[in-house]
Amino acid sequence: MKISIVGSGFVGSATAFQLMMSGTAREVVLVDKDAARAEAEAIDIRHATPCAYANRIFSGDYDALKNSDIVIFTAGANQKPGQTRLDLLKINAQIFQEIVPQVIAYAPNAILLVASNPADIMAEITLKLSGLPKSRVICSGTVLDSSRFRTELAIFLGISAESISAYVLGEHGDSEVLAWSEANVGIMSIHQFAAISGKKFTDDVIASIDDSVRNAAYKIIEGKRATFYGIAGALTKICHSIAMDSHAILPVSSHHDTIENSHDLFLAMPTVVNRSGVMKVLYPKLDEKEHATLNKCAKVIEDYTQQILKEL
Image (cartoon, rainbow, N blue to C red; front, side, top):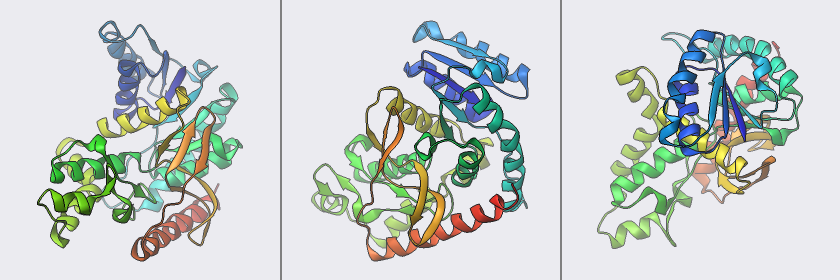
């Protein structure tokens, strides 16, 4: 499988490294307007391949994207202090107006995987600019957020995060929805497991875990300027499901004609992902409060999406 990454900054390079070291991709290409940075990252990662798999990684211009199976978008500006979300959207939308047509010109058969922020809205922009079928444009969604949720639950319960099924839904952002009502450990709910383990999800515990998940990025950025290992793991997980045609259920974000009373937007829900991209979206039975919160989340995404699309 050939996987190309447009953007070789922190997220792009960390993802390239993870793809190579996990053996998910046989060939990785880095493309960036800063060609020297892309080349340096490719060389550095290449020196690690003897410790993992005999895979190829190199940098190039857009013509290097030819025959890509997946193209990951990590390019774009980061939100600056005092900058509104719409300001950031306008900047990144302009960047994508230049990038997406070139990607399609050289990799018309690729699945497009969007991680540039605000990811859900940038994915809708990518869908419109690319003209591809809905199933072949995927947003990283809340795969990372769900991993954070499972990690925090695992720490509290004292078990492996692999044994926990828990999803964050909606947007990859402040209005995301932690689906507590559907979280499980093995064959029982997290509340049942907590009870037999001598623990209890009090309001304070729930609030603390919610805060840790929802505000994780802010804490990480404060300490090290950017988040990249977590999202690199999430992107690799998505790519692995596509490469292996594994039909894994992941909370990626995909296009919905209508969801939670909103229209034409990307929103993260449990989704079956295979070699063709998005195969099927699952709609969990949320409780009344979670539905109301998801409804508000969808409305936020819809409003921002409509505003920016008018300017394209």
